[in-house]
Length: 397
Image 1 (cartoon, rainbow, N blue to C red):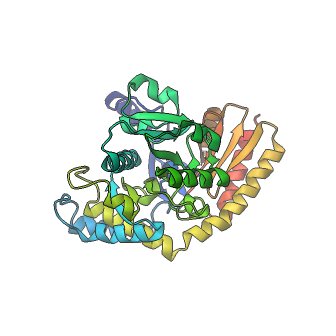
Image 2: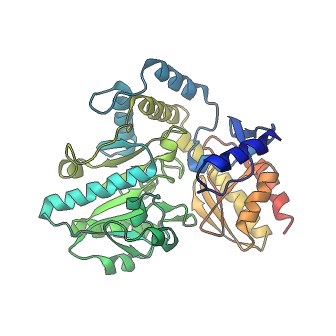
Image 3: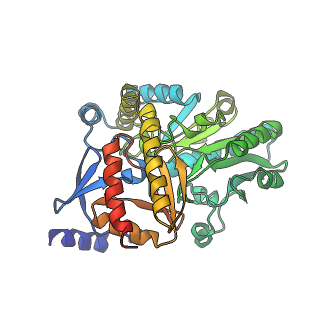
């Protein structure tokens, strides 16, 4: 079969760092994907929370095609209009003041860490500042991002990692307080933990950490790479808590398929942190990704996607709660908006594989959690279809 040939070719030439499903995805339309054999899949993973608009959005596609014909890249030695438009729009919807465009979420975290450390260095000239991150967190696989990722399994083969990082218990303010000292320059966390098992921050925890930061002159860094861009029913998850970070990282749905990330900061942090020569990137913020981000933000506003997420996620939560009631091997439902998880006592990787056979794409998180991060444009009919397929899988158990 042709599919087997392409899989063999991939395994022969590509470094084996992913255990891939035996499927070659070929095209997409709406919230569906199709493989090279023509099989149709309902996508409730969205490329790991990337494809917020689904597939084949013509307005988005036309914007990218138009920019390809106009200008792809110039370097950051010159200004370009698309990224200027994207930056202004992103600052407006986030309430932040300055943005730096990167190529990925991991790079956004790297930049956020550098900004925090430079901010602290500018205040006292010390180079021994510490960062408090969270247990069970995930921020990326570069060395800097790994250093603040709260999973020893990911970190240990690459230690020693840069910086001094301490790990607190997520949603435990006392745990955070116990680690703070006069060298703490930043507290970094996901507003909703994704890879760690879909754990939203508790309101008292997030507000308590913010207050602690203000009292001690510590910067609050929020990772909104997966939970941002409307997924929780707010453009950024922290807006639902009313807790504004000093620095924020985002990516994934920011480009809806085009590789782009960003870290943003308040004016006060920008004025006292990174200066010319402190940070840079060849590709970050070029005209092509600028056109993508700008058009994504336009579509979000025109389609009122954030409000749509609030409406459809209430229905998804209701349906997932029914599953929890009907199957004893579901121990918990967690999440907010269209970022949901079911904790299972049966093999979750086996469930996702069987779901794929039924034409349903689901991914896992935290070892035993089935993760639901569909395109933000799904409708109730798609939730019903997902439920029907998933019940077929669960019936085997």
